[in-house]
Image 1 (cartoon, rainbow, N blue to C red):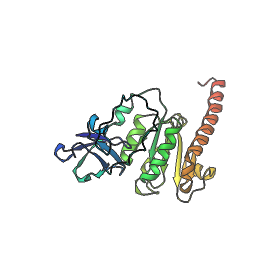
Image 2 (image 1 turned 45 degrees about the horizontal axis):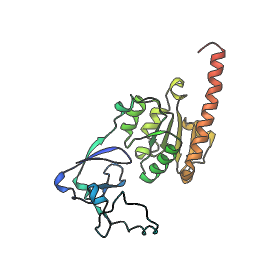
Image 3 (image 1 turned 90 degrees about the horizontal axis):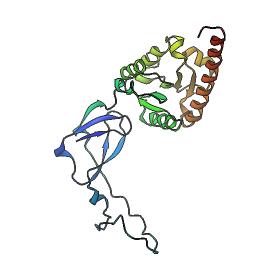
Image 4 (image 1 turned 90 degrees about the vertical axis):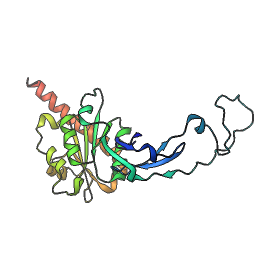
Length: 241
């Protein structure tokens, strides 16, 4: 049986003989450690309540009040050692050919922080890619044009040797002006423009303020667009574009 992690899109293979039959169970993704629900129940089994009585989806309306919701059945925790990681279900090469969408890339090692940033970018209308290794992130950056890129300073294990940041920093203006890069740090002060300049990013975010990342990212992207709109208008007026 093949399943896809609902968070990082990793394809996971489970031997059929080890899958619980006609049951709901919880799987932990070996890549991102996200827990998500998997069901092998038939449609008929899903329609049954705790009493074992098959509910009719087409029962006529009744004046009687609806019964209280039945308690959720406990789910078995699936043994993750039986799961084979088969890589990302969506590869950077496949992503390259999807058009008409705003792309965001998240490069954060901490699963809870990653989830917070992804949820915020989702709400802002981005199609979010999750890079779980620096190599994956660099490959994706080369294959796609991201409008927003959020990196933790310690992504990959070291603030001094952050390979993704070292890849982005020397990018030329024609590439960087389409990308708004945010850097998260433990000791940062959000929107410290001098630090952002020194780090060659568009904005910096204090790790403690990640719950506010939606508004922070929205403001940073808006300011970046406004700045480069003036820049593009100046080039156009000078006849250079």
